[in-house]
Image (cartoon, rainbow over all chains, first blue to last red; front, side):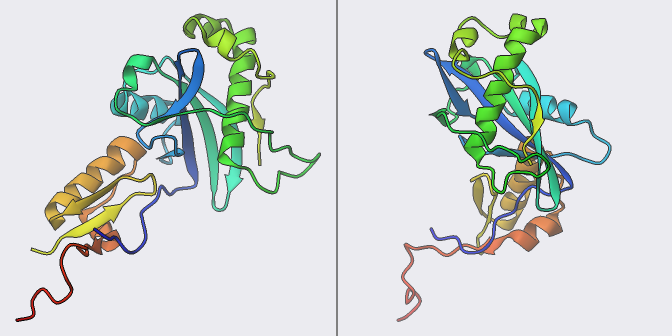
Length: 164
Length: 61
């Protein structure tokens, strides 16, 4: 079968970009209903982003262990809120999953955003943010299952920040 | 009945009758992307499906 033409995409002035992460034999992997591709959600004008992400993840995958916004950036006509969502291994089932590779961060200048931001750099920062939370936030430290602390030990802890 | 196809940027796609594709696309958008589309919006983004396994001269005698 051949399909010609455009695809439809998530729109709206505020969108959530969800990175579903799980621990596979001590190694962090990326999964989700879109596989390892960015999973975009539309955020309605009257909706709270965290509520939307929690609800959609719960409906499409199952109850998450942790939902946390880790950065934001401007992308053309929208503001993109990035979320790291931690799920239990039992929820991965048939979803495609890819090991997460380490990359250098996209660094801002003093008063300007990075010129380009790659998807993997957003994931990298999200996991550095999680590495910070597991040390700083007792709720996160308590919720993340055994093995996460050692999986995050090589990530330099960083708080929430603007990527663009 | 002619088949149509819709494709989401996330990689999901559905081919079938217009009724099936519209229903599946609306369900996918709402369940996976928190998007709410009408039948007309889905049909506007749908494209005719071209079957590679059907020779272009299949109707020739």
